[in-house]
Length: 119
Image (tube, rainbow, N blue to C red):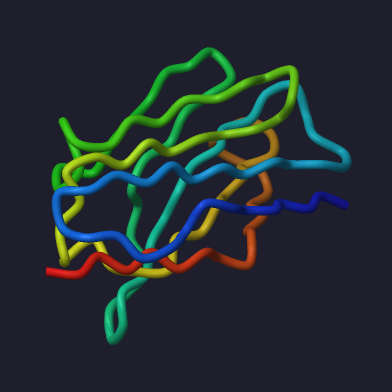
């Protein structure tokens, strides 16, 4: 079994910064990817950013240049540094672990952390 624990959400003014953290524990395969998704009220969950153990990363177009994803493999921890936050970044942010190869790995999710950006 795998557990993901997120931290770092909160309330911030537009233009501000926040850093999210997520630590995975349990039976974690050597091949995996970790990432962040978000879900705003009334909208579907969407990808924010992902990163492999080899530190290959992808970003949603809406956050490129503002958000940076990183990870500490020794700690099984992924971070999301969010700068120049906008009100439209307001959402519940969920940590994701795809445990195994991308094609057939199993997905695990954290409980989510709320990020609120005020204008």
